[in-house]
Length: 292
Image (cartoon, rainbow, N blue to C red; front, side):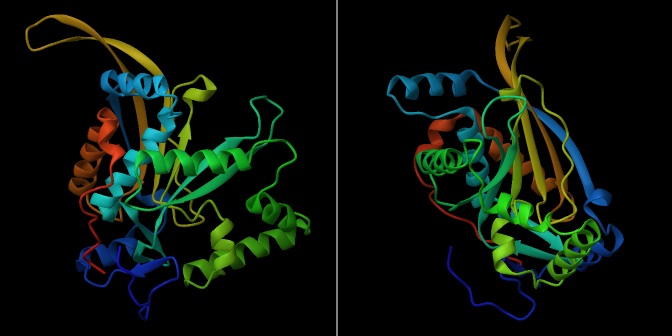
């Protein structure tokens, strides 16, 4: 993406959308919070080609997991449908600078193990191999009971204060954020200032849930996926077959784009999920938000 000069009204993490239809400008005044504007939907991803792909790459000693494919498919979708990478703050609509994915990571797989949240930055031209490297590096850096990342350290520092002061600090930071003046250092460590959250509930042995999108921060999408399932289906020749699939639960902020655009973006996402070999090369073209 070409870098644009910061204009009046822009934030360091987003560009103010000035060319959008007046209806979209007024919507954040009507639906003031993300709770007001949350839309829930689910779909299933057929895994026939995906599982074969994972098997083939593992035979080549390439450590690609399902989570990597989900991340790579979302990044490629944003590269082609950039409006889903928008956010609302201070009742204004912005195009986000950069693609970020936040993930919850257990420091080790035990009930007593604490959980931390990491935020990974990606480029719209990233391939599945770039995603594997970036995600694995961040997860490796945050594993181990004794490891505290910058997010953990910031939270620990704030919670050393009396409770009434903690409430005031969070309220003040939120006030600054609504005005686009939150310090870059806090934005960098905040997992809530992200393009989307992804949660892998299949690794916990359960099906996905509809997870709310946070009012604090700027995230507009939450994606959850769970265990693999099997189902019977009737093909075009009226034969009964069996296939594997995985359920996705998605919660989105409807203020950032219309339902038609979301539907087209999700069809693109499903296509990449079911044909992950397409993610091995960079996209031919990166589409930029044209309403800035």
